Every structure is written in C-alpha cells, then in structure tokens.
Image 1 (cartoon, rainbow, N blue to C red):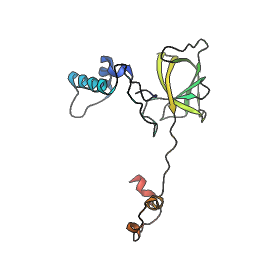
Image 2: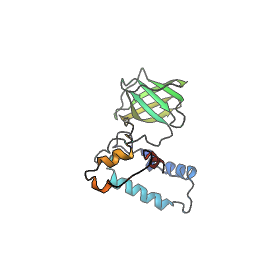
Image 3: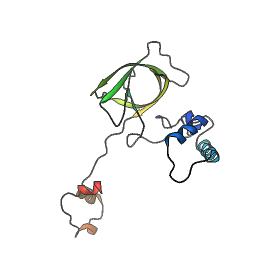
Image 4: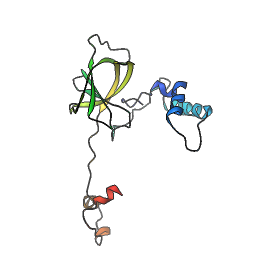
Length: 183
C-alpha cells in the first residue's frame, strides 16, 4: 500500500507491472503463470475495496520500508527529499511547485531542485508516497511518521522484564549477552 496505510498502488494490478516483476526477479524453482498473477489480483481485490483502499488502515511503521528510494516530506510541507537507503550520502531535494494545485486525491506537485551529498534531511520529516510525473516532477500522495529507532535491551534487562524471576535464579552468562543479537 501507499504510505497512508490504506491505498493500493494501481501499478500492482497492471499487466505491465506483472511483466516488470518477471524481468527483475529470478524465481528459483517455479515461475508464476498468468493465472497465478490473476489469483494475486483476486486476492488483492478481496482485501482491498473496489476503490483500491483497505477498509481499515495499516498500523504505524515499525522500521524503514524496503524501497529503492526513501522519500521524506518536510513538516512544513514545502520540501521533499529523496535518498537511497543504501547510500544516504546523496540526497535529491524537490521543492513545492509554485503552481502546485492540490488534485482530487490531495496530491501536491513537487519539482526537482538540486542534489547534494552528505546532508541529512531535517529530523521533523515524514515518509512520503510519491508518484513520478516526469523525470523532474513528482506528486506526494500521502505521508506517515518515520518510526523511532528500536530500543535494544540487554539480555539482563529482558530477563528482568519477566514477572516470574524464579526460572532465572540459577541462570548465568558471560559478558552482556549482546552476541545474541548477531546470532
């Protein structure tokens, strides 16, 4: 779905998208057939309403979504930042188009301004669902809060969080147990 947690991207239902998926993914044993993709579309229409929206929105993001580009929307609604999660040193900055009109689906148009390196978007940004119009022009469909970094507890803190400590009375471990995070 889009960042709003309700709307299904239209391209997920198109035949072009199906061919694109087949070109970019290598299927190890089986290749989905046209009927498999038809079943996929049927499943999506079962979950999503006829307007391609969920009946109830999804919950908040728990971690960064696995997208090729991360789009961040400023809290002032006038700047849009695009960065690759793998190489956060390069950021493309888009500005709200002077003639930006809000469309029927509340999409606001932005135009590419410049790229720079080693800049972090402001802390008060949000994830954005973006649709490309041209090479230098995009629209923002919706936005959502960026998730907070997860709190990593030590092994001792996890054990201490349990109500019944008797099970752990004779338990001992070396170091702080942080190796478990990498196991």
